[in-house]
Length: 290
Length: 276
Image 1 (cartoon, rainbow over the protein chains, first blue to last red):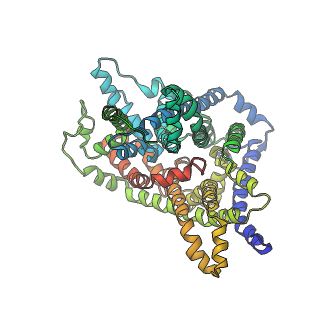
Image 2: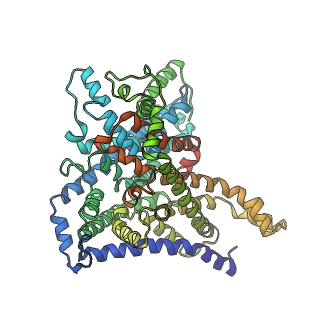
Image 3: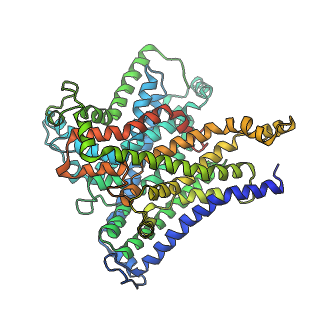
């Protein structure tokens, strides 16, 4: 169907998107790489000098760097673990016949539509606050001392908040996948004497693998750059206990005005994301063959 | 996957599912309830669930204290603006990739998706400095541009998967029947493409409305949409639970309603055609 003319038209239609995305990628990224080799502080205009790898060595020896890297991976890993396992369990539950299934589904997916700043504020103040929060009240009811979530276990608390936001997404996608499972296959397995556990591990889990890939892929992209939840709840603290790479770079560049150091950090974040991306793209390459 | 079940089993499942669903939904419910309380009732111990005097005063205060609707309007303009702009760029691109595929189409598509993996923080400083020099800092236009670009890869990918499902034979058949190109577009293509465009539109509005990294870093008082404005409630001295709840309820309500009504289309779009 593709004639010479339609091919030219196709290229013409495609080019704005390609050119814009290319510009969006190359211009800022090139500038970040360039800045990362400069001694460049926003408060000293015109004072930029070439610095070589100085910014990188500062960034890597910054006492906040390794904690930030660990926190980033813990945050991504923790949320992925909770949402994937929780999502599979919830999907299995919601797939059962019950009364009011539609409403249950609506309630479960709601957190996905709440903006991060709102959910962070609500959790921080109305639940995790040891004095006025509901968890503090619950602790008192049960006669245990209230737990100050955000100062005693800041990263864990942020993982909880972010997991609450993403659990619906995982559930929704896994549930959709589960509903497409052929019920005859299950019934046949049942007749052959397969118990609920072997049905789950040999039939349902393999069937869910594709959907789980999508969940992990999309969530990782978003979770690597969690920002608002940290800014609103802990400001990365106490100390650096809840600082991830995104937040570290933000604080170096826009709070301390050190463009050079911040840029070096940004490039490190890009490289880390690319390492993760290579694995992910392999996964979608395999699983999303269109 | 509905199978035969006993009433007892169904009752047990119903109770467990409702319990879990209510726990998951509770923070939202609590926010909505608190928004109708007086500040005293909002921090009362033991907490008041329904036994308080309902009031709308928080909604009034939120607007009169901070010009809330300005930020609401910013959110509307920015999320709709960036969504429409993204669609204008993406529809022809996805269309040509789906119907006039070339040797590189698949690679271009993968490359586009990979730009989504570029962490925002890696390009934050240049965008910030360029916008400062161009006078785009703290403007709605600046945010529209950024949000368009960050969502463009997903929009193109989603539209591509939808367009690809439109079978080429239908077009050829209608052409054989003597339909003109105009008729073909209006009567054959559009009806098949519109559902895909609609769900892409919905998802993009939701993503843009809730986006927080760029809105927090590129805007200040003037053009801040709700996702950034709400963060100003985090300062300890300014914290009033009932007012925070009123502001939050208004910020999440439109998207919550939009999301609930369109969940089926959203799942289809989000899974990139990977889950049937």
